[in-house]
Every structure is written in structure tokens, then in C-alpha cells.
Amino acid sequence: MIFTTMRVERPEGVVVARGVAALIESAATAPTVERLDFGEGPAAALVVVSTTQGVPLIPWQRRDTLYDEANTDPETGQLAKYRIVAPVETYDGDHQEALCERVVGG
Image 1 (cartoon, helix red, strand yellow):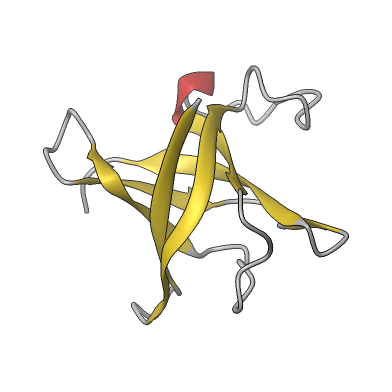
Image 2: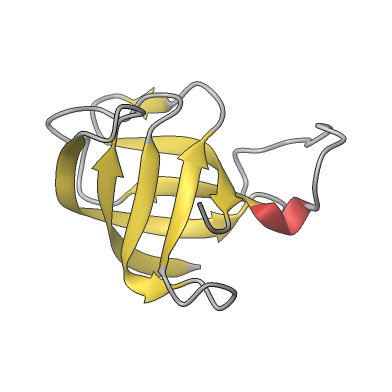
């Protein structure tokens, strides 16, 4: 588990939020993901990112890109980057959870 903050960009490259408090955990161990059977890429490339301080003013959507504002990707030296690949779950206005794929480079 990694506690951090995220910058959120829409597919058009528009930044819609900065400093969103979040928790990143492996999708293989996350309690909300029962079974992953995409047949693509290793399970380590999939993570669940959850907000930790409520639902953002502009809620997350599928295809948004989340940039970890505190941690870099060891393969690129750039900010770690995750793309939301499934519908985002919102829980009673308390928090959001998104299944994401780690993006390396470009």
C-alpha cells in the first residue's frame, strides 16, 4: 500500500484536479477485486487506486490518467502514471475506487 496524492488528467490532457489524497494497492491483493482475467499483462501492472478524503469535486472517470505526485516510476524516472481501465466505483459519497493499469513511458 502506498499513500500519496494524485494529479488527475482527462484524455484530452486537461488537468481536472491536483493533490487528491489516494491509496494505491496491488489489484491482486485488493479486497474489492475478486478475480482478474484480462489475459493481458502481468497482474503487477494492475492496481486499485482509492481516494482517502472523500469523493473529489470532479469525480474520476474511466480513461482518466492519474499521476502520483510523490513517487516516480523506477523504469522511467518520471512520475508514476496510472490509467483508469474500468468503471469507477463511488461508495455513498465517502470515496471512489478505480481499477488502473500502470503506464510506463509515453
